[in-house]
Amino acid sequence: MSVAVAGCDSGNVVQVDTLPGKTRYVDTVFSAVATQTGVPYGASVPFGSTSAAPLLLDLYQPEGDTASARPVLVWIHGGGFVSGTRTDGQIPRLARSLALRGYVSVSISYRLRNGVTFNADPAGGIRDAVHDARAAVRWVRANSRAFRFDPTRIAFVGSSAGGITALFSSYDQSLGEGASGNPGFPSTVKTVVNFWGSLPQAADSVMQAGEPPLLIFHGTEDTTVPYAEALQLVARATQVGIPHRLVTLTGQGHAAWNNVPLFEAELTQFLRQRLIP
Image (cartoon, rainbow, N blue to C red; front, side, top):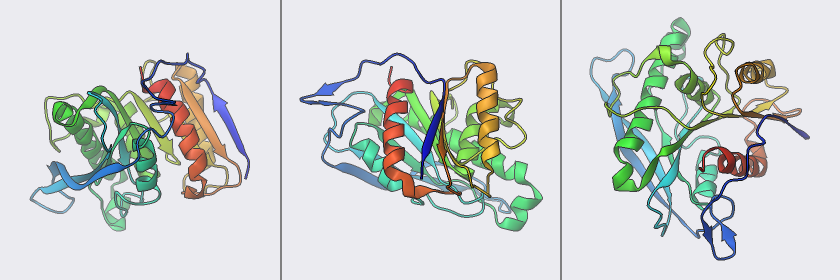
């Protein structure tokens, strides 16, 4: 497997916190991760129901961290909007890896539909996921003091359907905020990481200048979300001047989670440049 990288991500090197002999956000500076599972972040009405159900997340924090304002990564799992959980793929492994470097991660559950109802109304299914994801970002801001989150340094990280959700949440304001919880706080993020998702039929219209920088991972042999859709994202980002980076997984298909060491290296570099002020 070979890897090619393209984009316009050459920004200045940033100043970051340091610990003896190591650099926070780059090196492993903590020895353990504290995990809380099943934390409520809101509530929404599932498709076909008349009553709201709780929305839950798992929280990954560097154990022993005393920093007063930590950057937060909001992870959104895949599954075609019909399946999947917040512990799918390599989300827990990557969330822990980044927590050891000083980041906080929240991995969210969101409303899913069965295949029949999603195929009948894909736009509605995506909208529901976007509303829940935006509520998660608002939860981060609403709880920034209690958990020592930095409300100015939040990123979406999504894979497949989660990548689609992250992209629509970040770049398509027409979908609205929804009513999934934590009103009164903004749902904007500072940067976006997309694992093999896309903005189907929308990348050429919804991305605008000044919106969040974007990191894309995509396999050339992906038959679920074709590689051409990653190139469409790159073309639109280039057109409007959004800083971006495309990591091409040559010969790889969909959900290529076997590339974790590469993902760790690319995430570390990109987030340090684009999320840390």
